[in-house]
Length: 132
Length: 146
Image (tube, rainbow over all chains, first blue to last red):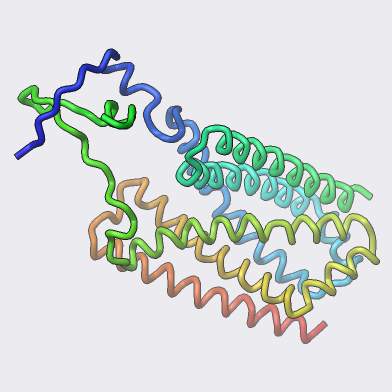
């Protein structure tokens, strides 16, 4: 037997349906998470092969490796997409576990800022290795 | 009604009655299953890889800074703590990699049936174990040759 309840909600059905859910937004975030994950499948395999080639390598070998334009571009692509995917994924974790709005905003923006800074730092490091 | 959210959790049945929408049961109600454990592991490994990426940033910045900074990061990676972090990072990366592909298959509409969900789950666990050990075996072999 269904529970009978009677509530007078002064909002339209559309108004109640809109913006519901932790993200308060459409499929953009979900889609970006999937698209970046597809790109990371081949990039991760390449990265593991690349790192195995550089196990215990001397400094000159790393400089030579980064100087190959294919390695430079793939490494930059890996960095950009990894940090983007990381930020998207961590945001979902925060949305599930942080109930306070201010703390959620702080954690999300903080992570976005950190991912931007670390991504730029890594990219500049790769470019310096490649171009010097 | 204690909480305004309760007012949002109402719906209409096809015969027009107002009903309360079902809420998810709390986590402690569930018996742990392989599928739910892997789902949680996907999150845990995602967080672990994110934290471990700091090591990659350090390695790249050190290499760009010069031979002495590079020697420092290479010393850390070769230390017991560094090897432990790197091993955990490798295992987490492989798990998240294989389970991510499993998620993409689900997104494409494939593999929702319970036997398939369990089979792909065990494949993820097996593939993670095998490739982590394999990559480390190759890595250790190459490191001895240097």
